[in-house]
Length: 283
Image 1 (spheres, rainbow, N blue to C red):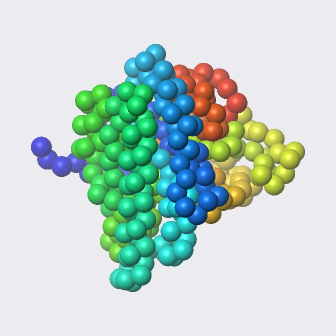
Image 2: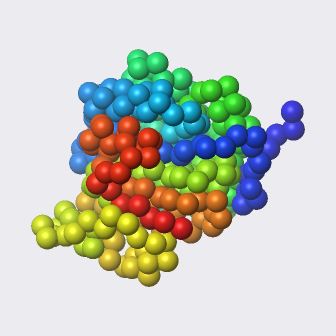
């Protein structure tokens, strides 16, 4: 089989109705902590809700999870945002960060498979190649083969080799948008630690109002009002999340839904296409 790469060109796949879902690091870990503290009970509740949703609806699912507390702490501590180049210290930080990301991925895999979800972990450090800190290409064959076999490929925020920067950060948010385009997905789901987008930062202003529905063009015009993360975050939190999705031109994308991932039932509702408290960004 000839290897297939996605580098801005639509990757054709004989499958439809694939949903890409990113579960934020602030959901799966206690992101205010510098060490890795995984919310195992919440993850077990989430896995049962995903299982129920997939039992009721037949569609493919790609999972992506954030780097979580320790991953972002390492990225900031070693100054990895601008790449490693040939710095021995930064390359050490990148290696340690990659190992931590993989450890989190394997723990999540163990928990999700307890609910008989056919999750297979795939590490972006081996599949994704960057250029100047941006995702340049993705080796798609393992992801598509997993979907073809009825499995759930799970990727994560990671480090990636970079043509210009040595190694750089592979944002899970950007990866979600890129994979949605490559897989011709019409929906991206973002599970975060808030109910969605607000007219102002809800962690700073008690009178912030949730925006239940908004057009893509309106979000682009109002990005300046979106807050950054209230935790340590190497990818700018909510502001970075929204920018990363909207910058990737995807004519097939109809909706980006942002919801509170700390409430397990929301995963069933989101995957089932039900109405609930969240923000829907419509193309």
